[in-house]
Image (tube, rainbow, N blue to C red):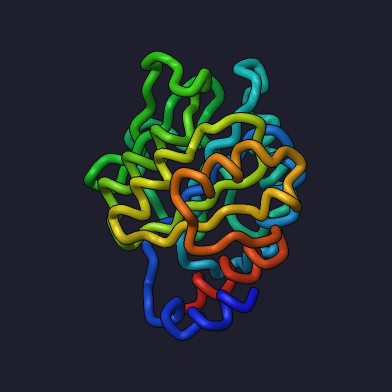
Length: 201
């Protein structure tokens, strides 16, 4: 949290255009602690890959929609990205962001044994938003997202990782730290507070 205070002035000067979040094992509990804390007038679109079973359908999206002030939905192919929304990747589809700031769905081969893959979303988002992007890795049991987060950092975006000691599964956040050396390693409560700070206009 000390690092956050040190960089707070810098953060408030920067106007980020999108936030991408990746999570896997333990993700539902982690996101339930983060997403309902975002206010109704939150100004930055939040785009999430959560590894789920392909048969899960839209049940998890409905779960969050009932608990969040922001509109929560699965991202549709060729849909324009809007503020005030939380978008989830649909089960069994890769989710990409195109230069025109619209979504693209893909059934290409799995990446890191996953579809949707966090790396696929993060890398396409980094190409589109460059330094205006925030990337966050939460709890998970594999290493998906580490290289995508590294690309966000290389493009000048802000990189945040859940403190592995606070994660239900530490493998994914630890892999991201090992590859990227994130700007912030924080608890879920600290990440929530930072997200709220970033969304203030």
